[in-house]
Length: 412
Image (cartoon, rainbow, N blue to C red):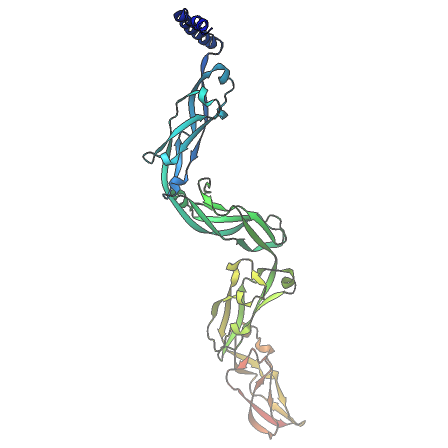
């Protein structure tokens, strides 16, 4: 039995082997005719692995070229028709960095791994490296827009107020200011809002933060909205100038100022008074020009809308008294305490007097209107002299020197 099987197997063995080879060849030919190998181009984004390899060296990088990998794929038609770009991945491993300028790209299939052939066209990811830098910046709160009528932004605050930044040295070094801006348009009450910090260079251009790492994505900005009011200023002086001098005018600018505060504080505020002792003219002999800081005299809870308006310019005019001669009619002189049978006769129709006062006040005097009196009580008939008393405003006028009036007292 075994002999028959052996004879059957080995009989014409050469022909049988030849037939087998021909069958294989025919199978392969048929297979390729029905499912031939084809080629197709694909592309996919290059992913970077182990980026911390550079970070650990205090470096950062920027891709210059090769962020997309292009490659050809060979595979049977039946396989190829099922392939898409998503079936491949392109990886640049930073640990394979060459000359600090490029990283080889490895493209692999995620499906049909043994049935596809990949021919790379993009072989490397080109990069530029730069030193990594960190910095801390104070966040400055700011506002945009105009609050409701009669309101103003009284104060701004931000929390937290420090931003930590890391990234390429060239970008970090360009940061000059970090601000957080809150919108106060038509707002009438205090508000808070979450705000994304804005980084700017010294020319106030906004800096692109895509290359930077920030420890804060947003901050809370608060705006205190206060009421405003225009309030009159009251300025007075104390003391008296030196003898024969007088304060003739006190003027100041501005006459009012705008202040801000809560409603309760402003409703009761009508004027801002500068204490008199702030402006002391005691013994002054010349004009006084000074500036008074009114911010020290504002009530608690009230502030100037514009801090630059704190200075009030005060001008005090000090004028010296002058003397001027006047001839007044003796008919204007009243004789006091004369007995009923006595009369006074003046030898002159006019008498000269010197009156001291300010020029503008002396200009108002008409000699014909000036009156006075003498006291003759206790005088006997005969020629006498008595001191003249003028009926003038003692705050404005005074006799420069005492005046003695000659007269004749006789019985009637």
